[in-house]
Amino acid sequence: MRKKIDINDNLLTKVKIISAFEDISVKHLLEKAVSFYVEYKENELLKSLTNGEKEDLGFLLLMQQSDRNDVVTREEVINILDR
Image (cartoon, helix red, strand yellow):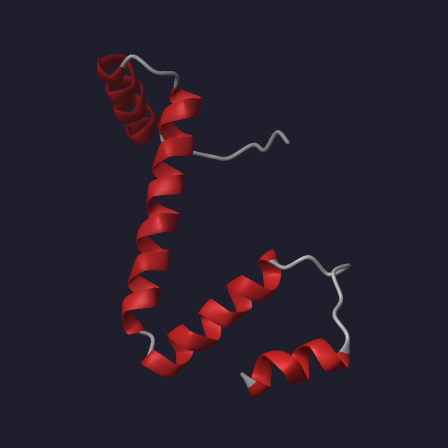
């Protein structure tokens, strides 16, 4: 997906200089910067969550990873809970 963004000339010059020092393209540098910022904000958000909210988020992530087509019978659930 190609997106156009407006960047002021001073910032663009700085980005070009950094990309030259890092020996990567401006596009790659901006992608890394955005990824870093998103990860930073996610970590900041996680630190501010209560333990209950962290548990809820963990359960949500586990549910998203589960196979929705994999089903078990009621008896299998009851047997596991009775152990």
